[in-house]
Length: 198
Length: 97
Image (cartoon, rainbow over all chains, first blue to last red):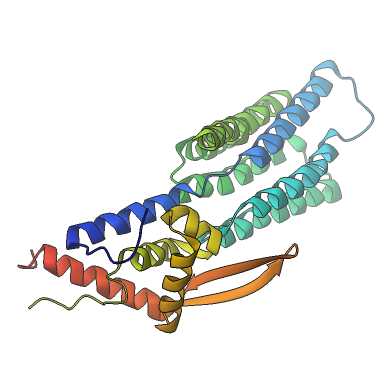
């Protein structure tokens, strides 16, 4: 317990500063739930699209509209996380602006595709390019390697998709969802659960 | 010549509080209590001392009908913390190497 009246040496002061900064940093942990939901959705939508292309069997509706459903759990999880937290980190505003930028860009690109009826096989590369940006930056800011790798995988697959057909592109897209969000989300969830037990 | 250590910061609990607040944008009283493992009474007294020195800002508000005390480090607090760390370093490394 830290109490007043105890004399501190210079070494003790520095140790205390490091200890407190470390404690504050370790408090940044998130549940990863939003990342898991988004990852599952991208994987499911990509595989459903792949199935439609592969079997030439159309479902009669745009499966990617399901992505908009992700907004509901995203809002729910972010409010639930905010209620639990008793501090605001420096990076929170950066993250809000970064992921909002991503959401706006995805929306504009989807709108552009539907307006000009762009060849889907070309736009998948652009979607994967966008997926990589916030993932890589988030991973870099929090020094979270699974997201850094996830971002890089999105970019590599974005380039690869320029040389493949739409069916393969959809498998690449599913891989992006898996490596950029689902797996990092599971790792965050496990970390969160472990911290809850401590 | 050794720099003088700021007496406001050269105290265990106040230094712990300011170190936590420099790492976050703002924090509730409960966060500071949890991380410093201190008593509410003692923490409250030390927070008031930091506030009086102009090192932190304290906002009291209600959230879901519960009172909430939010603390935030001020630019003056940041300067004081940086000076304090520099002074500590001069003690640890008197030759400046």
